[in-house]
Image (tube, rainbow, N blue to C red):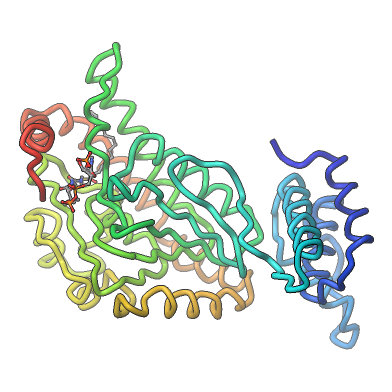
Length: 359
Ligand SMILES: CCCCCCCCCC/C=C/CC(=O)SCCNC(=O)CCNC(=O)[C@H](O)C(C)(C)COP(=O)(O)OP(=O)(O)OC[C@H]1O[C@@H](n2cnc3c(N)ncnc32)[C@H](O)[C@@H]1OP(=O)(O)O
């Protein structure tokens, strides 16, 4: 449940009682969230260039775009609660210390320094994507699209980025039967990929290890893909009796040319990080020993760029393709709905569970 009006009022009172000055940046953020929570999107003309203070306040409010009032209220309460606890417990106040934004079981979502991080969190299962996880990623993306962060990151916990679809998704067949399961799964897949197609802010994949299946194909819908040199990129659809998804049947030939796309998507060639970079799927590869440090330093610098300019630039680039991408997504999902019922696919899944056939 979001913050109530009472929580909001309490937070406003707490601000007055803060023992330390939170600094201009935080004060501007508080001002902007307060205005957004009480009046909605910025509705006043921009002050003149010499009216420095009011201009900064206006810009902070305007940067919140169409953030809903309820979200602004919640963000205000969260921000004040972070300030109160840090000023109570220590003199070393961290302005936006690791604020947890919602409760999820399979992902961890945190926001800091203008970056919302969604971390896949089933390391013991190589971050294989269960049905619950698809749902939680969609919810997390929805929340990230509305929060006040500038950049959204998807990454994995542990040694894998993700081993793709959790093959146990094929085993829990409901009483309505396998056809109904395939139909519902195709809807889930279509919605999942759709939430990447429609994501409005810069979206970055921090590929911390090997990536398989759908975790690779949706990379074509990200704005930046940073990979450790330990990462590999594997789309073994034919081995599994399946076909490409994540709009890769369209994005991969565009990114890497039809010959290289065919090698990956039809024949299941696994790429090293270096090969994925050479083929344009990956933006930059970093040595594993310095990967996290280098990537987060880079992203923190990017997150300080003007938020609206970043968002609008992304939208200009992506909007030209959106309709096409949705059509491709619908087609890929409907073809897979049939594939999942094929003996080729069922045999491959049985092989994984009976002989533990690995890729
Ligand atoms: C009709 C119903 C349809 C339902 C469909 C729902 C929606 C579908 C959306 C569409 C699809 C996507 C397509 C894909 O993503 S295809 C790719 C699928 N992925 C795989 O085939 C990978 C399978 N895993 C492996 O080959 C290996 O585990 C590995 C990734 C190479 C790692 O090998 P390892 O030796 O390093 O580690 P391992 O001991 O095997 O793994 C540790 C434990 O994790 C379990 N595990 C890993 N990956 C998966 C997975 N994808 N699904 C299920 N379980 C996985 C593994 O079994 C180990 O478990 P345990 O410790 O033995 O219990």
